[in-house]
Amino acid sequence: MKTYKRITIQERERISHLFALGNTLQCIASDVGRSASTIGREIRRNLSKGEYLALSAHQKAERRQRYSHAPKQKIDQNQKLKLTIYTKLRLRWSPQQISVWLKTVYGMSISHETIYKYIYVQAKGELRKELISYLRQRKPRRKSRKLEHDKRGTIPDMISIHERPEAVEDRTVPGHWEGDLMIGRDHQSSIGTLVERSTRYLLIVKLKNRDSKFVCKEFSKIMRQLPKSLAQSMTYDRGKEMTEHKKFTMDTKMKVYFCDPHSPWQRGTNENTNGLIRDFFPKGTDFDKISRKQLLWVQEALNERPRKTLGYDTPKNKMNKLIKENLLLR
Image (cartoon, rainbow, N blue to C red):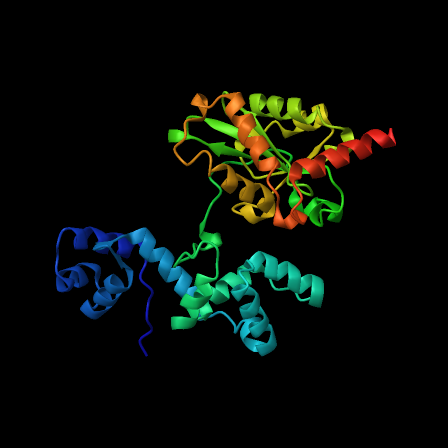
């Protein structure tokens, strides 16, 4: 019995080259040593805007192979779980929020990636479209995390976010911050954004460049102005601007916890705040032309805005209360 041999990346590169030159399916099949029907099916499956790209086609084939042999998901096996996830998605809960809620309330270990995979792979037709419409980004496709690589390099001696104390996660203790850079026009300028997790209080840092020593120095300078109890830790992504994190910790006594690659939801407070800042400074803004005074005005505007998550109190009011409490305890 003849067994089917999967198309290799080398064959796909040859198909891509010959197809781009305008060769017929028969010619391509003869050159590659495959049947014309196999070549036709391969091109139809992976054609994008009239182009057949070898690497993209190979990645898609690998994804199909993985999913075709995947066991039935636990979501499909549990009707009550499936309906609960549908309900939360309709309420515009994110898969991350649903995952944490299921673990907290029911002790069920369902990762957000499992929920995303169910939406984008298991769900079909109109149901798939409906579930995607409940997601914040509403992207018709989702990139496989396994196919992505962290191009930003490795930062030495990182402390993983998974070592972060539970008190940081549930926001019961103030003084734990999330940080990031917002990049300006043509990646030539930037500002730093620091957000306190429990109060949502924002600090915007003017930066001349993204050199790690300079960024950590500026972050340290602003953090040292706070009471020690309100400057306990920082959660950051894997940007190289935080390579000098050990020096930052020495200067501020604040531990720096690093997120997993490609996991912006692990510092969701900062991500959401950056979205609010973009209302004032859209993508393409040259931050070198934005003065400290302008940055301070935006910082104050957001800190004085009532937030639903704070019971319509403001970040500024929340932070001021904590500072007063700190002074009374001295």
